[in-house]
Image (cartoon, rainbow, N blue to C red):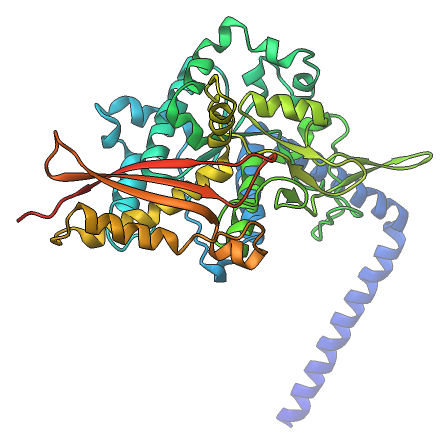
Length: 463
């Protein structure tokens, strides 16, 4: 009896629910027009899209996204299983400038403690090979002063600093306007670049590289470019022009070449030229739909021809040149910010120019890191000057091969053609040796032989 009552109640409940849903469906069929529904959904998508556009194209959000996308660009192209380590330091350019200004001496700054004391000067730590900074510099006195301090820290720890210059460096608002400057070398004769030219004459300026222009790091969102699953969204990049696109600092692209060269042969030397490690492939290419077909937008925010690239290099800048009708760009040069000194003899002048090139600075810096480890291991021993010089020369000779045209594998393990270490006593500092390193690498740039030198000090043993 009870079971029969429950079954009857369930049947009535099911009938009531079914009837209610059926009536609702009938009402929906009568009241809702599917075409109107599609129109309303499209309106909602359009309103949402305009709000998303406002967020994505806001300068503050673009700066944040550009930093993370640039870092992702580097991380995605790094083989971490090949002895590569990337550490991220979250510090703004203004904070870094303030840190240098607040310290009485450079060695008390946070960057010096972070890179030199805790890494280069600490047993068991990993010396920093390079600093990749998501900074853009101009030619103002505060920025040039910051570059001076950064170059001193970079030289002390033998870790080249790679950053970028902004259009404001040239007194312009966009890189397209920069490429329109006719006489670029003459343009730098202005009084606004007095501080910049004085900085370029310093020895430590060769440890700094500044890149330009920015490169496209993300395609605009859209069904055919970068689909969004949540709703129908097409990013509007027509009204804002190039400012609507997401660009990344060219220093990240330069870092990709550094990592790739190190993974291949253990040295950051092959970082320039389309066939020698300077290529940045597989860049995003945005297509414009024209009546006659599609037109590809260049993957950098300015197109730099070969002549202009050479002018940038002579001014101490590293240009990322996009290759038309392709999806890649290339660093054809790797000059530091240092202006080579002028000498009367041809060999001395050529040697000065090459010593200002970053590939050789990276080579010298890597050797300096090894030399630092060897010096640290010899502290406290009873070795005299001659014995220490003999051991250091034996070590450096392991990187030398006298073959004129060694293969790639041999160059990777023996990058030097000549090398010599000289150890001297320091008369006014009895507790230290002076160590001078002279090397001639196999790698040649523009057909000129190279000689590099490095000066260091090592404490003597206490007897």
